[in-house]
Amino acid sequence: MKKLFPLLLLFLSQVICSQTYTVLDSVQQTPISFATISFGNGNGTFADADGNFKFSKKWYPDIDTLYISALGHKERIISTKLIPKNIALIEDVSELKEVIITAEKKRRYKTKKVASEVHNDYFKCWLPTVESEIAVFFRKNSQKPTKIAAVYLPIKVESSNRNSSRGQSFSTVFKMQFYTNNKGTPGKRLAYDDIIFTVTNNDKTNFELNVSEYKVYIPKDGIFVSIQVLGYADQKGKLQQTKKYHEVETRKGIVKVSTTFRPLLPFTNKINEYRTFTRRIFYKNRTWQRFDPEYSETNNLIKNNNTNYGMGLKLYLYDEK
Image 1 (cartoon, helix red, strand yellow):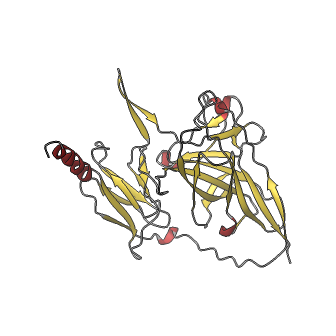
Image 2 (cartoon, rainbow, N blue to C red; image 1 turned 135 degrees about the vertical axis):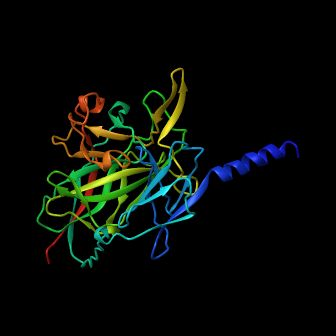
């Protein structure tokens, strides 16, 4: 009993310090999946599929305010001194997501592919961090109605060429979204549901994500397809609580090192135009930046002209009749 008592105290302290909160729609009282919880300092986390997230003053002692937001809802600001168990968000009428109802006719179509650019070079790969988002632009090259049937995502499951990590399993949760083309940059988000998917160490290097059921059609001005890192999944496939930084103790004090996620994302120099944009959800008001020399003078990918993520598409081009 003497040995068990300290363990019991440790368990109770963990329960008290780390509590689970749920983000809900104020009207429907239903969970809001993958809501954004920002700390207001460039860091943050996400709710899981059930609207749940964990927060602890022990984990984040310097955070006094949470900024909680979700598409179609007004942002709510809450003091960390008194966080309600259920956090209700009010619908924002001005930003309510449109509902696209597409009654697809049984029409003949031709399949066309926009090839992805796949390679296995660690030094030409983007190291994803939590909440980072990458958007790639695709033109509409046909007058025919064009639906995205699948998205090809180049991935590299090994962490480096020298140190093979085939024996190390992982499961990373991503979110896919679609944006209009606003004068060459990602614009308004298109009214399609979030596509949540996971990538594991068992997947192929040219990961194919079937999105046909979402009935995503390319507008005449083109479309931006984005993927965003949410974090790692647990054994049941649910999103894990992930800190944005690892805190490493050095002689000069605590140093924050960005938490990176596998798989790595191969970038390429085989695309002539700059069509890849990036942004961080908790930084600079979610501003999109084109991945070009103006983005960074020291980035090794850009120095070697590997400025595009080699995403590809499978398209259905429908007959007009």
